[in-house]
Length: 181
Image (cartoon, rainbow, N blue to C red; front, side, top):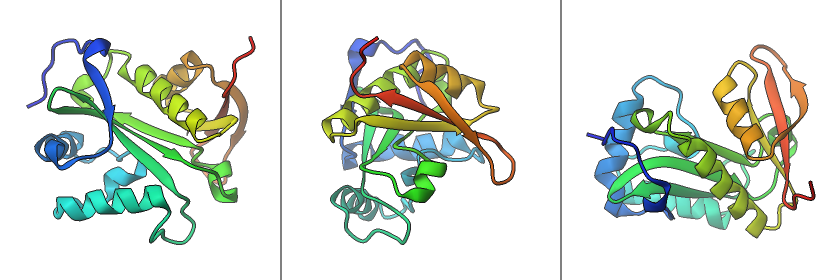
C-alpha cells in the first residue's frame, strides 16, 4: 500500500518505465479505481507488463502508432520503489491535440495528492518538452478542474483560450520554453 507520509522532492526520481515498478504500477491502477486515467498510456493493457512497456517505448520511437496519435515520451515519478506519478510528453501536436490534449498530460496517484507533487511533475515535464525543442508548450485541463488549472499557472502557464465542442469546457494554457518575465 502507498505510504501516506509527506514525500520529499529530494527523494523523487523521474525514470523511464521499467519492470522494477510493476507491483507499484498495479497498486496505482487499483488505487485509481473507476477514476478516469491520465495520461493516456495509463489506459494501456497492463496484464502483459513487458508488452505494455514495449508499447510505451514504441510510442516514444514513433512506431505502431494508432491513427491520430503522435510520438510521445512517458516517464514515471518514483520515490524508492513506489510509483508516485506519470507524465507523458507529446513530441508535437496534430490539429486534434492542439484543440484538446496539448503536449503534456500527467497524474499523481490518489494517496500522494495534496503535496504539490503535480507541480513538481509538471515542471519536470516542461523540462523534458524543452529538451525536445518544443518552444511553446500547450497544457490543457477541464475548466472545472481548479486544482489542475492552479498547478499549470504555478508552472508559468498562461490561459490562451477555452474550447468546447460539447461539455466540458477545456482551458488551453501555454508555457514558453524560455521565460523572459
